[in-house]
Image (cartoon, rainbow, N blue to C red; front, top):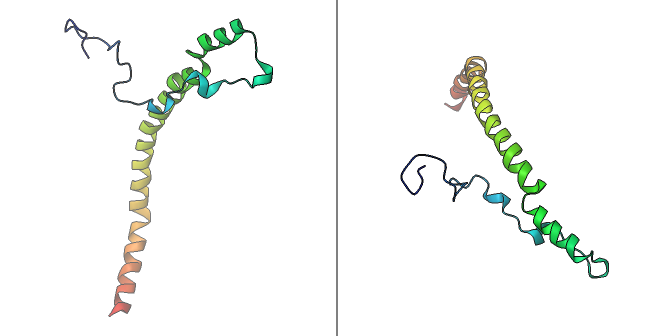
Amino acid sequence: MADSKGTPGPDLMNRDPNNINIHLEYNFEDVLAEPDGTHSIDCVWKLSFTCCEFAYISFVPIWCFTPFFRMLDLNCGCMKRMYGMCIKCCLEPCCEAAGLIFHVFKK
């Protein structure tokens, strides 16, 4: 992460270099629409377009959901490991013993 002069820092042109939020690419027309019979005045429609650029649709997923799911992913990795250890200690000996018993019936 270096700028055009080679000094380290955030990339101001590509702010999602790993494409984490690729599923959040929305356009104004994907979110708001007015039927032909109920058009608002032009200034309201233009202001809506301007506000939509930094709207709830972009803000919440990028600044709330993505960090939350990242944190959840990290914490669940720890829980997954602990759960695996419990299964390996408690359930695996029973399954292995049952497997050895049924292996005798196969012969």
